[in-house]
Amino acid sequence: MVFATFLMFYPESVAAITSTADVEYVLDSVDYLSDEGLATITYLAIAMGRPLLLEGEPGAGKTALAEALADGLGLDLIRLQCYEGIDSTQALYDWDFTKQILHLRAAEASFSAGTSEPADLAGLEGSLFDERFLLSRPILRALQEAPVVLLIDEIDRADDEFEAFLLEVLSANQVSIPEFGTVKAKVPPIVVMTSNGTRELHDALKRRCLYHWIDHPGLEREVAIIRRRLPEVPPKLAQQLAGAVAHLRREGDLIKTPGVAETLDWARALHHLGAGELDIASASATIGALCKHRSDIDDVRLALDKLLAS
Image (cartoon, rainbow, N blue to C red):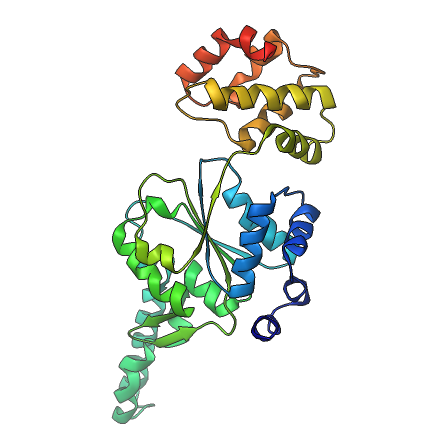
């Protein structure tokens, strides 16, 4: 009953999500192939109205999940890209100072011309913080425009103060603006936060979320992803690519482990060269699509014989 009441305010597409299988179907419809664990935690996040915190290696599909949810459910995606030094001004709101100054000047001119009474100026300071001067940043937009999918990407790149700022949003789906008041979402946005694990997030933030670690896909699922996203790639090449990447992740000792996005880029590069299967020449020529550090490229090129034999 609680779940039904919660979903009645959402579009029909979201209200139709009543099981893990429904989530799998929605994601599959936009070519995102999830496993059962990820589909289950995503369903629970929607059903319980809780933020979903996804942690894992870069390129494992964390950001892509939020994009797929928005696409599959027909919701707008509002993205907040975190970075070192980000604060509430970039994430929540700001005031349009230019318009505020013009408003002040117009009021002063009106008073000087005798077309307004001195008493009219009593509320002038308050009018400077009217909604028309409020610049909504991603988090405030998500609360105002919900239902939407709010992606808070790479939260681990922000600092402790920014995490603390998020607590009110994640707990009550509202923010307090001192000059304006409290803005509360009519319905909770679907919140997906991602972290690459570069630092430990605080327990206070984690307690407000459902948590899931995303691993790189196994061999067969990565083959399926390549075949689904790039049907023009021959099956044999897709199998070879997935096998080679799996070997690199397992034994390559690379500075930057390739993710699914890099596997797909490598497949596209080989397809553009007309390769029907992976060989030393084509792999060496296109390895820059897979590896993004010079030492990784050198190491992989030296190990191509072993890699192609795996």
